[in-house]
Amino acid sequence: MLYSEKVMDHFRNPRNVGEIADADGVGEVGNAKCGDIMKMYLKIEDGVIVDVRFETFGCGSAIATSSMATELIKGKKVEEALTLTNQAVVEALDGLPAHKIHCSVLAEEAVRAAIKDYYDKNGIAYEPEQFCNGDCSCCHEHDHTEHDA
Amino acid sequence: MIYADNAATTKTCPAAQRAMLDAMERSWANPSSLHSPGQQAKEALQTARETVARAIGAQPREVYFTSGGSEADNQAIISAAKLGARKGKKHLVTTAIEHHAVLHTMDQLSKEGFEVTLLPVDASGIVKAEDVAAAIREDTALVSVMFANNEIGTIQPVAEIGALCREKGVVFHTDAVQAAGHLPIDVDAQNIDMLSLSGHKFHGPRGVGALYVRRGAPLLTLIHGGAQERGLRAGTEDLPAILGMAAALDDSCTHMAENAAYVSKLRDALIDKLSAIPHAALNGDRERRLPGNVSFCFEGIEGESLLLLLDDKGVAASSGSACTSGSLDPSHVLLAIGRPHEVAHGSLRLTLDHENTMEEVDAIAAATIEVVDYLREMSPVWKALQRGERDYVIQ
Image (cartoon, rainbow over all chains, first blue to last red):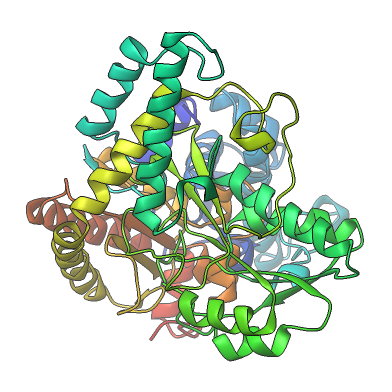
């Protein structure tokens, strides 16, 4: 099998799919050209993530990592969610194939992008270097030109 | 399970299975041995060569057995290139939609100093004969254009290209791996100098193929050793595989017309049903395509998740998305016909054969419609398209 049972479970039965109309923070990362985009919606009350939803365009592991990331941050304090790493997502899914690790990076970045949006909307101060500047591996459009002929 | 991935491989037919068991039972000796069992094996090998030759309108001595289509492509291209280079001809012409067995061999030759012209195809995936004519130069050693494409099923104007190569004195090779046993092939009428075929694409075994080389056309040895295949391909012949392939090819050619008529009907019904999905587009030409090939792009979704969910619903298919190709980029064929990356990622290939039924076509269409709908519902790209924040590529 390409994927672990955990990955297939989260792919087949993704948790927390959908959008939150009145979300307190929304983050979207990835690039359609590269084949995956994740959008994360957060509902935050008293600094706690009370609800989280996601929408993903991507492969099986992109959907599974999004789903797992939402489970890992739901009910957590925002500061705690910020410490979520892609490795934690990979471990929770019992591993990913090497060429799919970038999906877990994307999931981590999607959570962080949504939190940054929440901070921005609420005037909460933060260190800019804590967040993706749009130039990380997941959002950065890699060079396709030599194959575009 | 509904198997709809016959372009990847086919199930061995009863005729091939019988021939293989028979070979293991009776023709197991080494055809190079002088004793009676060896000579019996040699005769069986010769009969298989005659069968394969007859299927493509060739002479038996022009057929060389190989380990498959990739080896046949390698040997044909490397031979024509290196023998051309001895006469100062170091230019090769091929198309942007060839199989990697051709493209990567060409890449390797370009690293070794050959110049490769990669011809474009039109939006329906067909190379223009006049583009081939315009690309041929004084120093062109080889033109290699596939007979039919493995991803989008388009059938190339091989006879026309062969004729102009003949006129200009350039060796013409065609990778007929997807065509052999499915489309009529006549190397004389179609002006083909070299042709590759592969056993497992027409219900024969894998690990075996053949290279046709017109008498007088250039051929070099890639696998050195014994004197098998007239000294041009060493290694004790795999009799069960070769006999199984010959039986399968004979069977496929015998039933070609009826199978093509039946499978085309299934294909057209499936194309019609999938065309009803909004913002979906057929890849390749509607008319000039392999009888069993159905290839679509669906906007707003990604192919690997589509495949995995179809598998859950009992449909075995394939895709040209990056995640299924194992690289960062989606299929070079889909990009060559002008599909943007984001659309090429959402591709689905369904390849039918004579064992599929109209009921299965209905089930495949229903499953696909359901899965595309489900994935679009969770896709931020689809939502953005629907809200008008992105422009549809496929109208």
